[in-house]
Image 1 (spheres, rainbow, N blue to C red):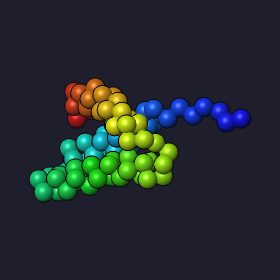
Image 2: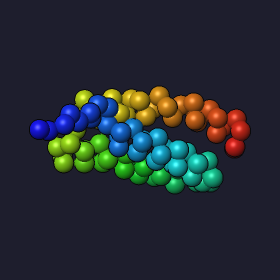
Image 3: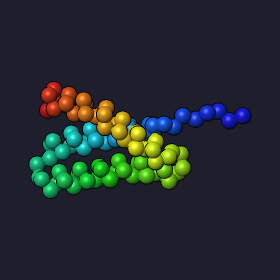
Image 4: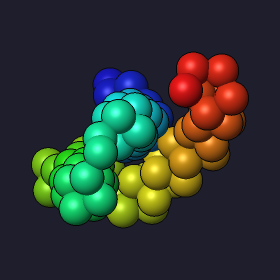
Length: 89
């Protein structure tokens, strides 16, 4: 008998978005050049999207699971950005 697998939302997509967006934010705050900031933002954005695409390609999640994971990750990240902006940097 197969056990139920709960895959909604995608935890990998959610945690990947939170982690890499916070890392990108911290690196971009310390970076001086505007073009380098854009490159870092685009690079980390592509990495986050590749995490979602890889979960779909491996057929472990549906696209709706990934979208929900990204949405929850963004909802969790916004208060973290406000905290980092006011306390750390």
